[in-house]
Image 1 (cartoon, rainbow, N blue to C red):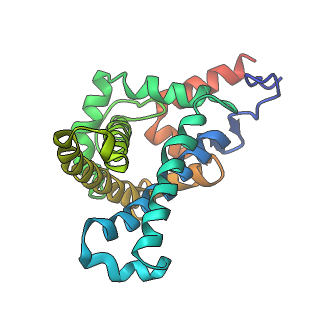
Image 2: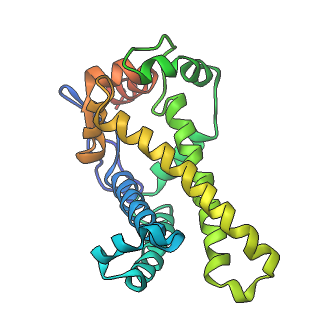
Length: 233
């Protein structure tokens, strides 16, 4: 019998043939809402940031339209993703947070070996859980970057309601946070689309499943746990 979701419905088996379910529908929705809204915010924000980018805002109808789109996207970036921690099947989101803030010795070993893997090799590190050390660092950048971007953005949006000194600090905090998140996003895209060893993981964010071979090679600890749970049902 398949395990049940929190809503009481039958959940799909996590291991099916030569595929392993890595991300639920809720996790995938959260990821894509966050990703799309972030890049819309980045594009429209460049027009607000500097007049050098304002000619490009003609794509969306001009700088004033870009400012409106920026604020609407900000709501999606914060509110929609935030709601997915409480509606639908949120347990996977809370597990992600739990994994992210539980940095283990094996995660540190993965991070130390990650540069070699980033440039096309395969690092020597112990079996990893659902999220490896590199993914946890990327998640931490996402979490804290989102917090700082959101708080500074609120201050900038409603600047008349805040002390001038706080408003002045909000701008560099906002810009630096976006810069760090953009750098992390570029690395993330490279690994997901171009890296010869990890690009196969992209299927996990498209249909939820990755190959059993990939799961064993990159997340052996997680795979073995899933296999044992499924065998004991």
